[in-house]
Image 1 (cartoon, protein in one colour):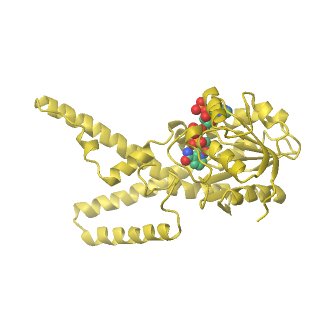
Image 2 (cartoon, helix red, strand yellow):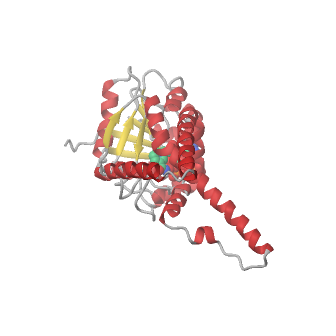
Image 3 (cartoon, helix red, strand yellow):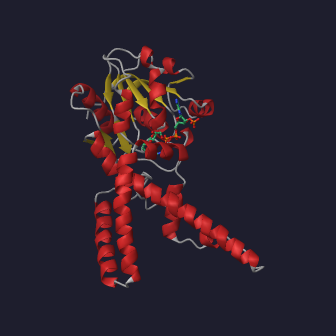
Length: 321
Ligand code: NAP
Protein backbone atom coordinates (compact mmCIF):
# COMPACT_ATOMS: atom_id res chain seq x y z
CA UNK A 1 0.00 0.00 0.00
CA UNK A 2 1.15 3.57 -0.74
CA UNK A 3 2.73 5.06 2.39
CA UNK A 4 2.95 8.69 1.23
CA UNK A 5 0.79 11.34 2.92
CA UNK A 6 -2.49 11.88 1.07
CA UNK A 7 -3.04 15.42 2.37
CA UNK A 8 -0.96 18.50 3.02
CA UNK A 9 -3.36 19.66 5.70
CA UNK A 10 -6.49 18.13 7.21
CA UNK A 11 -8.88 20.18 9.35
CA UNK A 12 -11.05 18.26 11.79
CA UNK A 13 -14.04 20.15 13.12
CA UNK A 14 -15.20 18.65 16.42
CA UNK A 15 -12.59 16.82 18.44
CA UNK A 16 -14.80 14.44 20.42
CA UNK A 17 -14.80 10.65 20.22
CA UNK A 18 -14.86 10.37 16.43
CA UNK A 19 -12.91 13.53 15.51
CA UNK A 20 -10.11 12.78 17.97
CA UNK A 21 -9.97 9.12 16.88
CA UNK A 22 -9.67 10.15 13.24
CA UNK A 23 -7.03 12.74 14.07
CA UNK A 24 -5.04 10.10 15.97
CA UNK A 25 -5.48 7.58 13.12
CA UNK A 26 -4.43 10.11 10.45
CA UNK A 27 -1.32 10.99 12.43
CA UNK A 28 -0.48 7.38 13.35
CA UNK A 29 -0.70 6.37 9.68
CA UNK A 30 1.02 9.58 8.46
CA UNK A 31 -1.82 10.43 6.10
CA UNK A 32 -1.34 14.20 6.39
CA UNK A 33 1.59 16.53 6.87
CA UNK A 34 -0.47 18.65 9.26
CA UNK A 35 -3.69 18.05 11.20
CA UNK A 36 -5.49 21.19 12.43
CA UNK A 37 -8.43 20.91 14.80
CA UNK A 38 -11.24 23.18 15.92
CA UNK A 39 -13.93 22.64 18.55
CA UNK A 40 -16.59 24.92 19.95
CA UNK A 41 -15.68 23.61 23.41
CA UNK A 42 -12.52 25.25 24.72
CA UNK A 43 -12.21 22.46 27.29
CA UNK A 44 -12.20 19.86 24.51
CA UNK A 45 -9.64 21.89 22.56
CA UNK A 46 -7.44 22.21 25.64
CA UNK A 47 -7.72 18.48 26.35
CA UNK A 48 -6.89 17.66 22.71
CA UNK A 49 -3.77 19.80 22.97
CA UNK A 50 -2.78 18.20 26.26
CA UNK A 51 -3.12 14.77 24.62
CA UNK A 52 -1.21 15.94 21.49
CA UNK A 53 -3.96 14.64 19.27
CA UNK A 54 -3.21 17.04 16.40
CA UNK A 55 -0.59 19.52 15.14
CA UNK A 56 -2.47 22.77 15.71
CA UNK A 57 -5.52 23.81 17.76
CA UNK A 58 -7.82 26.63 16.71
CA UNK A 59 -10.54 28.54 18.49
CA UNK A 60 -11.60 30.08 15.16
CA UNK A 61 -12.94 27.67 12.57
CA UNK A 62 -11.64 29.85 9.72
CA UNK A 63 -8.06 29.44 11.03
CA UNK A 64 -8.45 25.66 11.17
CA UNK A 65 -9.73 25.22 7.61
CA UNK A 66 -7.33 27.70 5.99
CA UNK A 67 -5.19 25.96 3.31
CA UNK A 68 -6.69 22.55 4.17
CA UNK A 69 -7.21 20.08 1.34
CA UNK A 70 -9.56 17.96 3.47
CA UNK A 71 -12.10 19.17 6.03
CA UNK A 72 -13.86 16.60 8.22
CA UNK A 73 -17.02 17.50 10.14
CA UNK A 74 -17.18 15.44 13.36
CA UNK A 75 -19.93 17.37 15.15
CA UNK A 76 -23.67 16.77 15.75
CA UNK A 77 -25.53 16.71 12.42
CA UNK A 78 -27.97 19.50 13.22
CA UNK A 79 -25.20 22.11 13.55
CA UNK A 80 -23.68 21.39 10.11
CA UNK A 81 -25.47 24.28 8.37
CA UNK A 82 -24.30 27.12 10.58
CA UNK A 83 -20.85 25.55 11.07
CA UNK A 84 -20.12 25.22 7.35
CA UNK A 85 -21.57 28.67 6.63
CA UNK A 86 -18.96 30.07 9.04
CA UNK A 87 -16.09 28.46 7.11
CA UNK A 88 -17.03 28.73 3.41
CA UNK A 89 -15.16 31.97 2.79
CA UNK A 90 -11.95 30.37 4.12
CA UNK A 91 -12.11 27.18 2.04
CA UNK A 92 -9.36 26.62 -0.54
CA UNK A 93 -10.26 25.94 -4.13
CA UNK A 94 -10.35 22.17 -4.66
CA UNK A 95 -10.90 21.41 -0.95
CA UNK A 96 -12.84 18.26 -0.12
CA UNK A 97 -15.47 18.40 2.62
CA UNK A 98 -16.41 15.12 4.24
CA UNK A 99 -18.12 14.18 7.49
CA UNK A 100 -18.72 11.30 9.89
CA UNK A 101 -22.40 11.94 10.65
CA UNK A 102 -24.75 9.04 11.31
CA UNK A 103 -27.39 10.25 8.80
CA UNK A 104 -26.68 11.18 5.21
CA UNK A 105 -29.66 12.49 3.19
CA UNK A 106 -30.17 15.46 5.51
CA UNK A 107 -26.44 16.23 5.40
CA UNK A 108 -26.48 16.51 1.60
CA UNK A 109 -29.70 18.55 1.66
CA UNK A 110 -28.16 21.06 4.09
CA UNK A 111 -24.59 21.25 2.77
CA UNK A 112 -25.04 21.15 -1.00
CA UNK A 113 -26.51 24.65 -1.35
CA UNK A 114 -23.90 26.23 0.97
CA UNK A 115 -20.68 24.87 -0.53
CA UNK A 116 -18.83 26.95 -3.13
CA UNK A 117 -18.69 25.38 -6.64
CA UNK A 118 -14.91 24.80 -6.55
CA UNK A 119 -15.13 22.43 -3.55
CA UNK A 120 -16.21 18.78 -3.32
CA UNK A 121 -18.68 17.16 -0.94
CA UNK A 122 -18.08 13.47 -0.13
CA UNK A 123 -20.38 12.55 2.80
CA UNK A 124 -19.19 9.66 4.97
CA UNK A 125 -20.09 7.59 8.00
CA UNK A 126 -17.67 5.31 9.86
CA UNK A 127 -19.73 2.50 11.37
CA UNK A 128 -17.45 2.46 14.37
CA UNK A 129 -17.60 4.02 17.80
CA UNK A 130 -18.41 3.62 21.46
CA UNK A 131 -20.93 5.20 23.81
CA UNK A 132 -18.27 7.57 25.18
CA UNK A 133 -17.73 11.21 24.21
CA UNK A 134 -14.92 13.72 24.20
CA UNK A 135 -11.28 13.81 23.02
CA UNK A 136 -10.03 11.63 25.88
CA UNK A 137 -12.27 8.72 24.79
CA UNK A 138 -10.89 8.47 21.23
CA UNK A 139 -8.25 6.01 20.06
CA UNK A 140 -6.30 5.53 16.85
CA UNK A 141 -7.53 2.05 15.91
CA UNK A 142 -11.23 2.75 16.36
CA UNK A 143 -11.81 2.33 12.62
CA UNK A 144 -9.74 -0.84 12.24
CA UNK A 145 -11.77 -3.65 10.59
CA UNK A 146 -14.93 -1.55 10.57
CA UNK A 147 -17.01 -0.26 7.68
CA UNK A 148 -16.91 3.28 6.40
CA UNK A 149 -19.86 4.18 4.19
CA UNK A 150 -19.57 6.98 1.63
CA UNK A 151 -22.69 8.48 0.05
CA UNK A 152 -21.52 10.83 -2.74
CA UNK A 153 -23.99 12.01 -5.34
CA UNK A 154 -23.64 10.55 -8.87
CA UNK A 155 -22.09 13.77 -10.24
CA UNK A 156 -19.42 13.99 -7.50
CA UNK A 157 -15.83 14.20 -8.74
CA UNK A 158 -14.45 10.62 -8.88
CA UNK A 159 -11.00 11.71 -7.75
CA UNK A 160 -12.42 13.36 -4.61
CA UNK A 161 -14.32 10.15 -3.79
CA UNK A 162 -11.17 8.09 -4.36
CA UNK A 163 -9.15 10.30 -1.99
CA UNK A 164 -11.68 9.99 0.85
CA UNK A 165 -11.92 6.26 0.18
CA UNK A 166 -8.15 5.92 0.43
CA UNK A 167 -8.13 7.77 3.77
CA UNK A 168 -10.62 5.29 5.28
CA UNK A 169 -8.76 2.33 3.80
CA UNK A 170 -5.51 3.52 5.32
CA UNK A 171 -7.02 3.89 8.81
CA UNK A 172 -8.11 0.24 8.55
CA UNK A 173 -11.71 0.41 7.31
CA UNK A 174 -13.49 -1.33 4.47
CA UNK A 175 -15.32 1.17 2.32
CA UNK A 176 -18.80 0.82 0.84
CA UNK A 177 -20.38 3.40 -1.45
CA UNK A 178 -24.16 3.70 -1.46
CA UNK A 179 -26.97 6.18 -1.99
CA UNK A 180 -27.67 8.43 0.99
CA UNK A 181 -31.32 7.34 1.21
CA UNK A 182 -30.29 3.68 1.23
CA UNK A 183 -27.74 4.36 3.98
CA UNK A 184 -30.38 6.05 6.11
CA UNK A 185 -32.83 3.13 5.80
CA UNK A 186 -30.17 0.51 6.54
CA UNK A 187 -28.85 2.41 9.56
CA UNK A 188 -32.38 3.10 10.80
CA UNK A 189 -32.89 -0.62 11.38
CA UNK A 190 -29.35 -1.68 12.33
CA UNK A 191 -28.48 1.25 14.55
CA UNK A 192 -31.07 3.91 15.17
CA UNK A 193 -33.93 1.61 16.16
CA UNK A 194 -31.74 -0.44 18.56
CA UNK A 195 -30.81 2.82 20.27
CA UNK A 196 -34.45 3.86 20.51
CA UNK A 197 -35.32 0.50 22.06
CA UNK A 198 -32.43 0.79 24.52
CA UNK A 199 -33.44 4.31 25.56
CA UNK A 200 -37.04 3.14 26.01
CA UNK A 201 -36.36 -0.04 27.95
CA UNK A 202 -33.99 1.66 30.36
CA UNK A 203 -36.50 4.47 30.99
CA UNK A 204 -39.32 1.94 31.46
CA UNK A 205 -37.23 -0.02 33.97
CA UNK A 206 -36.35 3.16 35.85
CA UNK A 207 -40.02 4.16 36.02
CA UNK A 208 -40.96 0.69 37.22
CA UNK A 209 -38.29 0.86 39.87
CA UNK A 210 -39.65 4.16 41.15
CA UNK A 211 -43.11 2.66 41.23
CA UNK A 212 -41.90 -0.40 43.15
CA UNK A 213 -40.14 1.85 45.64
CA UNK A 214 -43.38 3.76 46.25
CA UNK A 215 -45.39 0.55 46.66
CA UNK A 216 -42.86 -0.80 49.13
CA UNK A 217 -42.72 2.48 50.99
CA UNK A 218 -46.49 2.24 51.36
CA UNK A 219 -46.01 -1.14 52.95
CA UNK A 220 -43.29 0.30 55.18
CA UNK A 221 -40.65 -2.08 53.73
CA UNK A 222 -36.96 -1.50 53.02
CA UNK A 223 -36.61 -0.35 49.38
CA UNK A 224 -33.74 -1.30 47.08
CA UNK A 225 -33.04 -0.56 43.43
CA UNK A 226 -34.04 -4.10 42.47
CA UNK A 227 -34.75 -3.64 38.81
CA UNK A 228 -31.27 -2.29 38.22
CA UNK A 229 -29.59 -4.41 40.90
CA UNK A 230 -30.72 -7.76 39.49
CA UNK A 231 -30.25 -6.87 35.86
CA UNK A 232 -28.51 -9.67 34.01
CA UNK A 233 -26.44 -9.27 30.83
CA UNK A 234 -29.30 -8.32 28.52
CA UNK A 235 -30.43 -5.26 30.43
CA UNK A 236 -26.87 -4.24 31.24
CA UNK A 237 -26.10 -4.10 27.51
CA UNK A 238 -29.16 -1.93 26.96
CA UNK A 239 -27.98 0.49 29.65
CA UNK A 240 -24.60 0.74 27.91
CA UNK A 241 -26.25 1.70 24.63
CA UNK A 242 -28.66 4.02 26.44
CA UNK A 243 -25.63 5.82 27.88
CA UNK A 244 -24.77 7.18 24.41
CA UNK A 245 -24.53 10.92 23.83
CA UNK A 246 -28.00 12.55 24.12
CA UNK A 247 -27.27 15.42 21.70
CA UNK A 248 -25.87 13.19 18.99
CA UNK A 249 -28.83 10.82 19.21
CA UNK A 250 -31.41 13.59 19.38
CA UNK A 251 -29.97 14.83 16.10
CA UNK A 252 -29.92 11.36 14.53
CA UNK A 253 -33.64 10.80 15.20
CA UNK A 254 -34.68 14.28 14.08
CA UNK A 255 -32.56 14.04 10.93
CA UNK A 256 -33.62 10.51 9.94
CA UNK A 257 -37.25 10.82 10.95
CA UNK A 258 -38.92 9.11 7.97
CA UNK A 259 -36.71 6.01 7.88
CA UNK A 260 -36.83 5.58 11.67
CA UNK A 261 -40.63 5.88 11.71
CA UNK A 262 -40.88 3.32 8.92
CA UNK A 263 -38.68 0.81 10.78
CA UNK A 264 -40.47 1.53 14.05
CA UNK A 265 -43.79 0.66 12.34
CA UNK A 266 -42.41 -2.67 11.10
CA UNK A 267 -40.89 -3.40 14.51
CA UNK A 268 -44.13 -2.62 16.34
CA UNK A 269 -46.04 -5.06 14.10
CA UNK A 270 -43.49 -7.81 14.76
CA UNK A 271 -43.55 -7.09 18.49
CA UNK A 272 -47.36 -7.39 18.52
CA UNK A 273 -47.07 -10.75 16.75
CA UNK A 274 -44.68 -11.92 19.48
CA UNK A 275 -47.01 -10.61 22.17
CA UNK A 276 -49.79 -12.68 20.62
CA UNK A 277 -47.57 -15.77 20.43
CA UNK A 278 -46.82 -15.48 24.15
CA UNK A 279 -50.49 -14.90 25.03
CA UNK A 280 -51.53 -17.96 22.99
CA UNK A 281 -48.57 -19.97 24.28
CA UNK A 282 -47.39 -20.59 20.73
CA UNK A 283 -44.01 -22.07 21.65
CA UNK A 284 -43.32 -23.22 18.09
CA UNK A 285 -43.52 -19.66 16.79
CA UNK A 286 -41.27 -18.35 19.56
CA UNK A 287 -38.70 -21.10 19.08
CA UNK A 288 -38.70 -20.70 15.29
CA UNK A 289 -38.04 -16.96 15.62
CA UNK A 290 -35.32 -17.35 18.24
CA UNK A 291 -33.62 -20.04 16.11
CA UNK A 292 -33.67 -17.74 13.09
CA UNK A 293 -32.23 -14.81 15.07
CA UNK A 294 -29.53 -17.02 16.59
CA UNK A 295 -28.28 -17.89 13.11
CA UNK A 296 -28.29 -14.18 12.20
CA UNK A 297 -26.13 -13.51 15.26
CA UNK A 298 -23.74 -16.24 14.09
CA UNK A 299 -23.44 -14.54 10.69
CA UNK A 300 -22.60 -11.25 12.43
CA UNK A 301 -19.85 -12.99 14.41
CA UNK A 302 -18.53 -14.74 11.28
CA UNK A 303 -18.42 -11.38 9.47
CA UNK A 304 -16.12 -10.10 12.24
CA UNK A 305 -18.59 -7.39 13.27
CA UNK A 306 -19.50 -8.64 16.74
CA UNK A 307 -16.74 -7.96 19.22
CA UNK A 308 -13.81 -5.76 20.13
CA UNK A 309 -14.23 -2.02 20.25
CA UNK A 310 -17.62 -2.12 18.68
CA UNK A 311 -19.69 0.79 17.59
CA UNK A 312 -22.64 1.32 19.88
CA UNK A 313 -24.66 1.90 16.71
CA UNK A 314 -24.69 -1.88 16.54
CA UNK A 315 -24.62 -4.29 19.43
CA UNK A 316 -21.48 -5.22 21.34
CA UNK A 317 -20.24 -8.25 23.17
CA UNK A 318 -18.21 -6.10 25.50
CA UNK A 319 -20.50 -4.67 28.11
CA UNK A 320 -17.74 -2.54 29.61
CA UNK A 321 -17.32 -0.31 26.52
P1 NAP B 1 -18.63 14.03 20.79
O1 NAP B 1 -17.65 13.08 21.41
O2 NAP B 1 -19.70 14.61 21.65
O3 NAP B 1 -17.81 15.21 20.12
C1 NAP B 1 -18.39 16.26 19.40
C2 NAP B 1 -17.59 17.51 19.67
O4 NAP B 1 -18.03 18.52 18.75
C3 NAP B 1 -17.79 18.07 21.09
O5 NAP B 1 -16.54 18.49 21.64
C4 NAP B 1 -18.71 19.26 20.83
O6 NAP B 1 -18.60 20.28 21.81
C5 NAP B 1 -18.21 19.73 19.50
N1 NAP B 1 -19.14 20.60 18.79
C6 NAP B 1 -20.49 20.67 18.88
N2 NAP B 1 -20.98 21.62 18.07
C7 NAP B 1 -19.90 22.18 17.44
C8 NAP B 1 -19.75 23.22 16.49
N3 NAP B 1 -20.80 23.88 16.02
N4 NAP B 1 -18.49 23.54 16.07
C9 NAP B 1 -17.41 22.88 16.55
N5 NAP B 1 -17.50 21.89 17.47
C10 NAP B 1 -18.73 21.53 17.91
O7 NAP B 1 -19.39 13.38 19.53
P2 NAP B 1 -18.97 12.14 18.62
O8 NAP B 1 -19.46 10.88 19.23
O9 NAP B 1 -17.54 12.26 18.23
O10 NAP B 1 -19.94 12.40 17.36
C11 NAP B 1 -19.61 13.32 16.36
C12 NAP B 1 -20.31 12.91 15.06
O11 NAP B 1 -19.94 11.57 14.76
C13 NAP B 1 -21.83 12.93 15.12
O12 NAP B 1 -22.34 13.55 13.95
C14 NAP B 1 -22.24 11.46 15.14
O13 NAP B 1 -23.45 11.25 14.43
C15 NAP B 1 -21.08 10.81 14.41
N6 NAP B 1 -20.79 9.42 14.80
C16 NAP B 1 -20.73 9.09 16.12
C17 NAP B 1 -20.44 7.78 16.49
C18 NAP B 1 -20.35 7.37 17.94
O14 NAP B 1 -20.28 6.17 18.24
N7 NAP B 1 -20.36 8.29 18.89
C19 NAP B 1 -20.16 6.84 15.48
C20 NAP B 1 -20.19 7.23 14.14
C21 NAP B 1 -20.52 8.52 13.81
P3 NAP B 1 -19.73 20.35 22.99
O15 NAP B 1 -19.54 19.08 23.77
O16 NAP B 1 -19.40 21.60 23.73
O17 NAP B 1 -21.06 20.40 22.29
